[in-house]
Amino acid sequence: MTYQTGTSGGALAVANPWALVPPLGNLEAYISAANKLPMLTLEEEQDYSRKFKSDNDLEAAGKLVLSHLRLVVSISRQYLGYGLPHSDLIQEGNIGLMKAVKRFDPEQGVRLVSYAMHWIKAEIHEYILKNWRMVKVATTKSQRKLFFNLRSMKQRFKTEDAAADAGTHRETLTDDQIDTMARDLKVKREEVIEMETRLSGGDVLLDPSPSDDGEQAFGPIAYLTDTSQEPTALLESRQRDVLATDGIATALDALDDRSRRIVEERWLKVNDDSSGGMTLHDLAAEYGVSAERIRQIEVAAMKKMKKALAEFA
Image 1: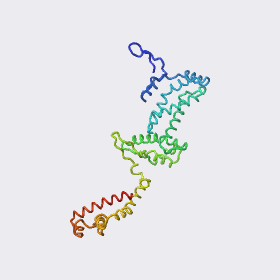
Image 2: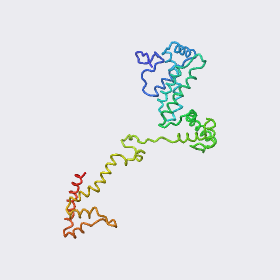
Image 3: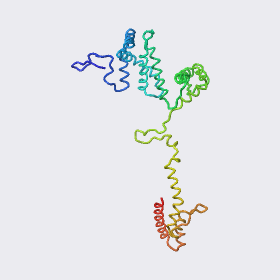
Image 4: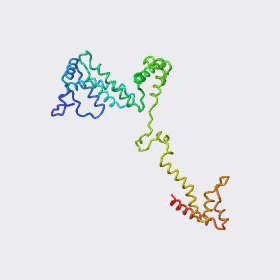
């Protein structure tokens, strides 16, 4: 809002009560400014409407819109339960308000506020249905009516239950409440049950964002992802299989007979009792050398096999 200031720096007069400047920094400031805009009398509203309709006077249209911004704010508050930003709801409602101003006929004998309510709600409804979930929850006219009335009717039922019994606390609808809702909204009982089920289930992020401390949040993506069929995983698995068969066989062929037998007995042989092959001392006794010598031969053979496997890969 533009002010004229004196030498003391205080606001002396409002130069333009319709201005929404300086730029507003947050939603609360916008709502406060919208509520301070002057409301129109019936005569002013009709005068501005006729000027816009006959002369395309955009300044007159602007005053009609600005004077009803508080109406959009009030209506948008009714839809905060759908988890969408209040600022976005207001923005969509303002689009509906502008459509209403464009189509408003002052000769019909109704106030703009009554006419605009339909357009504001219709625009907010469309926005919610498009953005509330990726999967459409309401496609027919009756389903849309059910979607936007189910929450309020559930709240009414809860209030009635609380009044009847202070200890009653029920999250789901009873059979009688489902029948009442279906009758009042003129929809099938099954449609009420289906919509209630879909609205009561919360959305889950498959891949949550990291927390404030930088830690990666755990989400369903961690256990829903099937990595076994990824090309890189398949190639790595196939390479491991080849190395475990042909690669090992090629590496063993590069060893002398004694080194090969020591490696096979120590690492590749499994007895029926799963106890493994011969120990260092068993092999030392067989070849007539110390256990340390068998270990040295084993280390040298493993190094040679590692080099052979690298060349094979």
